Image (cartoon, rainbow, N blue to C red; front, top):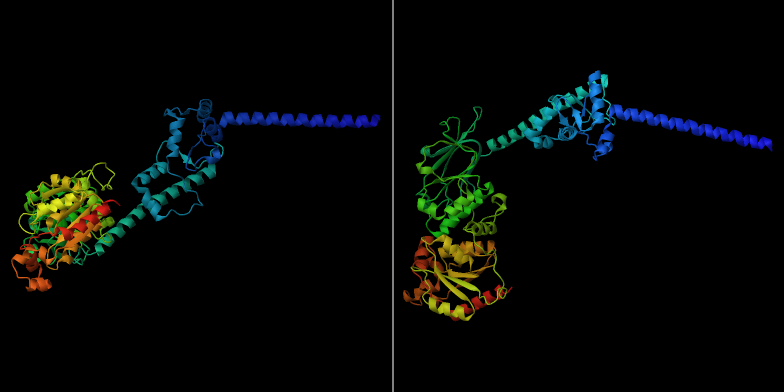
Length: 571
């Protein structure tokens, strides 16, 4: 029995001895750790004490200050450990500022990182290049990669890290510069290979250049300056108005020479924005041609620059630019330059001579810059003239309001001979009728607001229907087609464009008894039996079926068109 108790006592003493040794080890480890914390101030403690990231979450871009080996440096470090806000007494920089500076430094490249791609280098830009140089070579302190503790890698490891850092920095800088140079070289090479002008479009010739461009109005020339080694020798003649092949129109316009050159006059005026050069005279002065020949093509060509573009206009008519001054001010922030009267030598880095144009009064969104469409143009015109209605309201949405119908009247040709009867019939159907005449001298600001206020606009084929650009979305355009087999022309001029703007479109072709031509020709005349026989060119068609014809609308025959329009307004 005594032997058993003695054995238990021995085991108990041995356990107490182990506990004592373990306690001594724990206390010793704690004292060593405490000494380590006070002396070295590891990053983990700094991050946790200040409520920031833990050390394993710290970004690899964080660079740690190189430890100074002399005793003074150790003294400063001990002081910093006692006051976590103080990091550099000499510069008086707080730890927060120092950490912010470190976090915004360029990341150090690890040896096993993949090689930086060309696109990443190009995306970094000059600012990153400068920042990288400062991270590698600038500043008061030496830097190295971070470690888990705040111990500094010294001696051979320190030298190796610094050499690797310098090497990586030099490679990155060189790659960055090379990448940008290669991209610029490719862009330049692409434009150098590309012809200065594109004459393939059946409607409009356009020249576009990027590089060193000099525009000399006195010499009617646009010069693309070539390097001395270039063998290109291009000369183009262009009249920058989108009526290609129409000699009657283009014969009035100034011809420009677009050419590659190695010799040119010195620049007298420099521009930091692109240039767009175009002509005005042509057929402008007719509302339809104002839009289809200038305003729509100009919108298509210049909208992408958001006002940062300079217009140079050949054959400029001041009265015309005054009439559409709000459009020019919306497209360009700079005063118009009258090309014919300008004596400067203008220098640009990007120039477009001519305007992008397609079919009549339309935009081919598949070819236009940024896929612009007539919907965009319709919105642009409403925005330019500060028009309040973007879309029509369904009938009944506004109590006691009637759908508004605008009838475009004419005073010389293609007039409504029974206008009061038409107005009465429309009012009986429930329309509020507005009658307005659109002509060259119309106040466009006023007229645009009238058009925007209505739900339906109707008129005989003619320039007045061009005002449909101010209609709200889902409004209806009704075109009355005169006698003469010109339905195709009417649809091209206004049917297709209005539908492309998001409008509803109806086309009503008058019968023989609704035409004033019955007052000039007998009913058995060829003009009624076979009007297509008179299609001997547009001028003949215009003189026969447009300039000499008026309309006496058959209200009973036309009534279903207005009833169908009312039904659509309910949808």
